[in-house]
Amino acid sequence: MLRIGREVYDEIVAHARRDHPDEACGIVAGAAGGDEPTRFVPMTNAERSPTFFRFDATEQLKVWRELDDRDEVPVVIYHSHTATAAYPSRTDIGLAAEPDAHYVLVSTAECGNGAGPVEFRSFRIVDGIVTEEEIDIHQ
Image (cartoon, rainbow, N blue to C red):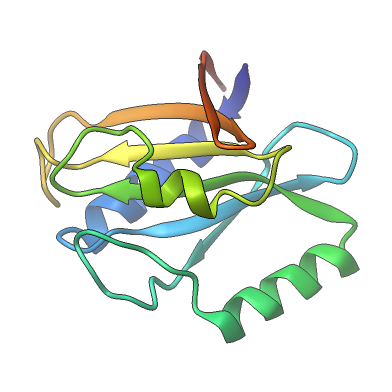
């Protein structure tokens, strides 16, 4: 189960809306050895694409070094889908390299960058196996 604070949830959704029609991406860091996502880190989609995302390599190196310096890990790796459901694509599954991370997908297909509902789902992806998990959004 992913346990995530309302503020972090809202920040992920706002980032997905803001970047629509392109996919948004980023991480939520948390203490190493823990499973509580606490520090929202929006990142740049280097592809600037409505159908694909890739972290900017320079930015990713900087963020991962910062994680090491702060004794943190990427608890959540998130991105948005702008025209399809919030479910990992074959490409998403193939690129999933953090077996301990929660992979969050947000679909803005229904609302675009305006108000309206989004689909927000979380998955574990280990060795190509996708398992959806419950989400507990707390204050």
